[in-house]
Length: 362
Image (cartoon, rainbow, N blue to C red; front, side):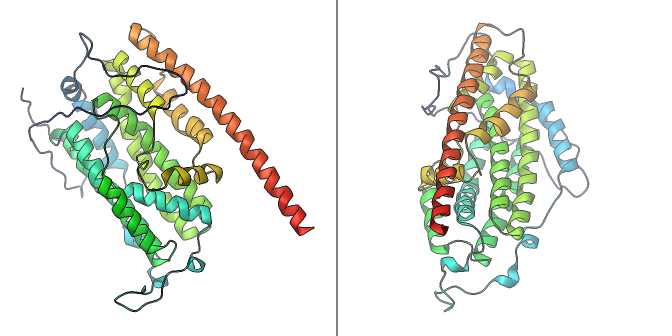
């Protein structure tokens, strides 16, 4: 089946082209375990469902509209303008500079941990591009969006690495070793079996990444770092809006399929940087430090998107859609309860640390 190429209106200064290439579909991947409730989220083909190909064609006009809206509001920015280059100096090695030491870093301990995790997550952009280009395609408005998104995301890794090395915020050797290990493993999406699952995942993931960057900046202890990450977070928010609006349109076309996709993604959600060396330990530190934890995940990531979609209020669903809706509600209730328990544990931990500090001063 062939389709006509669509011309996408573009603001002046955005030299973008929609290319017509043959669309390809890929299937694979099993979902991770670890849900709070037992839910069978195995993708099953059901009679009368929309195929990925039909959905991609049906949503083309929505993608075009959202792409034009994005291009109208997105503001270009220069990564080099956010890096304090005057603070830079040579490292040890061929240039016989000064070795790195932790005393040179101006950011907090938790800031260093989160900055490394966030940068390594951004570093896997080549794999992310391959995933979304394989699922969404490279032609028409879809392809234009895929390439624009990749170009904007590329700025994030550039500016973060330049900042970290120029300010000596983190150990450069450890950072490069982590990058090589992480990128050598590549990235395989948990949701590549389904276009709707992929859209649902990035709608939540872009918001999660935005919040992680924003909170990292606030906890970094360096106003320059905070400003840089706030700029990155603005991009991530615009990307979230694109995917969120696209997901809402999918609910209008295939509500039962979209509901199942949201349920599956919410239940099995994990950040794209989960393969980073030492990720679990770093994630625990970030949770304790208030950068990203279950309460933030529930209140600031999952709930806003679910409310925007009106997923829990949607009527007229079929049996599978209603089942997914009920299971989504059950899972969210369980996640809220688990977040409350962890909050109580963190509060008790802070109280113990405060008491210990008071005794030490006395």
